[in-house]
Length: 189
Image (cartoon, rainbow, N blue to C red; front, side, top):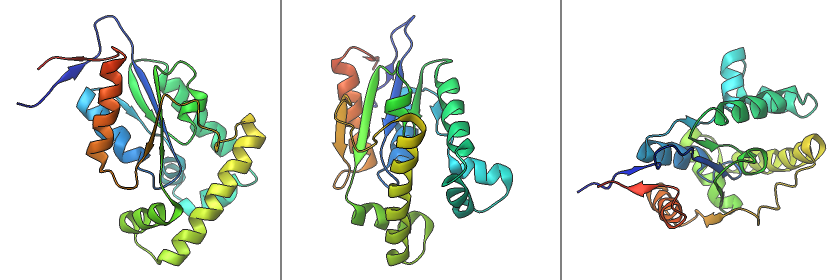
């Protein structure tokens, strides 16, 4: 029998999930939100690129010097997350969503992350590694300048998960177990 979960009545549950590109943020956030029947908030630079009808790589380049892209993404995500129970998946979710009931940080090696990005988007692995390394460095620089956040310091997260050898479903089960142990959700079936 399939297990079913819900947020206790009259409670609001906000789960923040962060990690670098290729760690599984988007996949895990979506699966968890689906399993808990909660909205998944994952508004990113990719959404902005689509809205502006320009290549994603151009947004990354523009964001190096124009912080309005970061501010737009971050402000919109937090505004949406503050409205109701949700799963917020973003690079800075655990830092920016102060009222998150559970903060989860996902990590994996640079090699594994590049392989995942290649599998998802295609391309040459060496180019993806270089782009990912550049993006990580730029993200860290911008977050420090914009918010004085050091995104390499995530030890305060409630749950830190190495995603390298775990499937997205296994990661979701770890998060569910943590939520149950904190009485943030209840099992209904």
